[in-house]
Image (cartoon, rainbow over all chains, first blue to last red):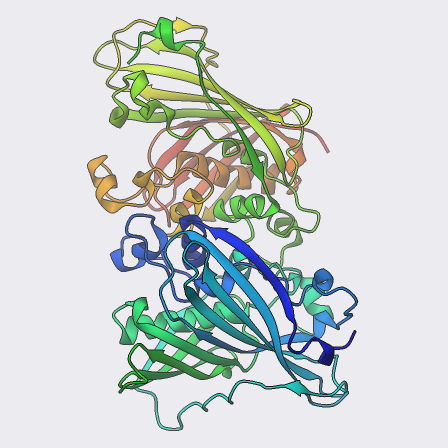
Length: 290
Length: 287
């Protein structure tokens, strides 16, 4: 089976129950609670009046898209896959616990040639199991570095908007824990490249890297605290490009530009002076009307 | 409190619990393993390949919760403190599996109406498929508001010992995270005392305290590092007395003395210079 043949097919459908413990673990794995007396942080890590983060849908349900056994007959060069882009639409806020129904589709494959790999666009739809309400759409783009040359098919989402060229309006830095990835993987993405030094080395990294989605969650936290008074319910859409790997223990510097209902962000690694997140956009509710 | 005659011997909780490798890894991360993610010795406890369960995982498996709070026992639960904890490993805990836990009241030791009573309980953790005994957990709680009712049962109380006069054979300082208690609660002990600043103040603490069992597990990390070469299968038992609260974010200094087959230890908060674990005894098997 080839990648192109997957375009337009549903890779997976299923149901997942989640609990407040999952929502709290998600927040703790993003560093919330490091000031345990800060009531704003406690709202995300303590079950009383628990407030779910907008990135929770990213870790709910099936994480197996690029796990070896997930598609019978499809042999991909898994260690050479990189998470390239993420687009998250949030029509409504998730409750602190519930059951979600999910469907995962392959939308497009964009071939870059045998030497450069192929972009694979997948889409995950999340619905509330009890009333069928649409909760989230996650569009993920993975660069399959070892699987190019098989041709293109399908329609990829519109290109992401570049990071603004003008100076940022706010800059925030945040240290990470050396074992941040070990914690983050307990959200469900157990890809060993984030834990095993040997697997990371085989994939071409000096050591296990942080999940791109964790880096995104860290950056989004700065956006929430800087622009939105920590009100996650205002966020309707998030987009980002994973520009380079970020390693647990490094310091993240987040740059933020605010333009009414639209916020742009990027992030770089302070120690290596390299951009790790680019093309970051947060759209607030009501942005389309304004 | 219910009369000791009615309480002693009672099975206060029985449950079956399935746990996954994720639970075993979360427990290790929540007790401070993996802070050096490139150390293969620590990685064995926080990464599913060749995963080893920490012996103290038995403390949270099939955890009965704060059963003394149940109304049928008529305990002045707000005045209950955790006094001592011991686990004995009979067979290595699997990295994942299904276990049963049965918690029984073993004995009540009365200290008089003004001082309360010690409540000794025991949890047996067994492998569900063949009922093989994996671990025994002995807990002593002090119910400060329930003294004067007399005692009952046979309290398996070990004699109090003095630490050797010589310098410790090893001293291990392990920092904890400010959010350590918030993480540890996800292993199953959701007592708000460990998360809610208001509840902690009501309990007489300046801020939420770390779970005693988590502090014990941090001391276990010191034992693994200095007495077991990070081979948890060598740690056969561990006992501590909780002498003072320990706060998340503090550094735990564990002093260890190796004595013919046993390790004696205590542990203190470096920042406050207060001993938080006393009467520490562990049995470590030879390599």
